[in-house]
Length: 338
Image (spheres, helix red, strand yellow):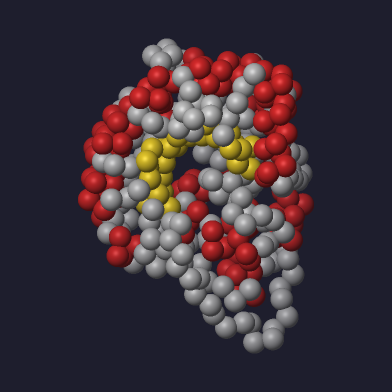
């Protein structure tokens, strides 16, 4: 990521800190002498909609098979225009299940033709939906970096979060990806996994649990992959509903606030990522997108209005869920940040 310095601001003039139960994210930044500003946009993350073949309990998108929101070809073309015109290095495609969108393959292939590195947030089981059986070959042909969520290397924890039978299908999908070279030494085809805790706690140390996953998946299922990313569950949408119904909301928020780490701020994904929703509206991150917290009002609000010089240095819009990205070692779409 471009190393723009984080702007320092004056401390709180010796005033006592607010109780953790009342403090805002901006207050905590101020107490650390920090202000959150964007660097150069290096990743265009396109959320193509909420349609998904799963309805995971932790989903911050609230995606499911009943959702109908999907991106149009017109909005895709606006995204591709931005990639071409401004030479944005990375196209990060997420959803929902992106592969269920009619123009998904067009977005991938044209994004690659524009010179962008392509990443797809792939839930593995969508590979078994009609018309998607050849996804491993399509991904390989377009040199797509595949990033897949797998809550654990055992069925019980995975199915508890993602639905009965998901683990078995996920393992078969990983084997299919391995069969075309994904995750294997020397292939150049990158297969990364994502770990979200099953419950109201922070993820463990990333390298440690990556080693556990690699050892257990190889031994139990003859499956290999490149990297494992740990991501903190954000207290929004379906996960927030679970926190409230299980009476864990206050304790979880207290945990996030207590674990605030100022060293994570420079590496937050909102600093070099611009998030586009299925209608073309712009957000600082995918989490803000789900809460409909748009980019600052003094910059363009739609992807067709994107101008790099206007967006670099903009103020990042924040709320209490941002404590999730700065807790412990930090959390981003690429795992820990410090």
